Image (cartoon, rainbow, N blue to C red):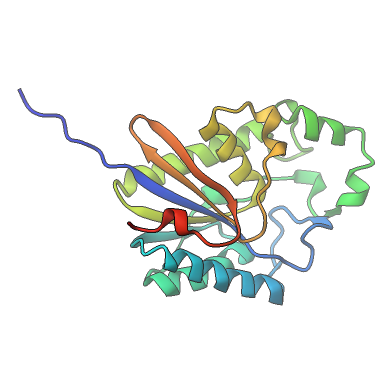
Length: 214
């Protein structure tokens, strides 16, 4: 009888892009042409240093197609000897008609309460639903894990997709995912094995010593 092959766990480091000129004021969504602010560039360079300091060999660096994620991934890839690979599955949620709107205006909408308290039941007008976004990001990470068994990879994405993935990994209902905070250039580490995910850290903006190779 043939022995079953042991599948080694894959460590996924999910990084939110750095700050942009509109972070915290506007819902940019998938709009093109939004680049990192100077602070965001510095955050990306710091994230690269923190990841490098773990001593882990990074096998691949992925990013969504948008400028702000590619610019965040660039110093991480350079520091780890990799090239930035683009994966559309890491894209921001499609906010549809809400794309580019100021958050202060969106908060006045009656639908805003649903977005915060019952996101699983909300679809952005002419855009994506939160459920679709979560399914997309989970399937994307699953595919990346399958392509990199036993390795450590970086995936640079956006706040809402990362929050939705963390909720899934924790077994938390999507309606509670707004309680998760994902700051610019924070690192969230999830170890994926055949037995399921293990969330090692969420929203880490400082030293990643707990992830260092012992």
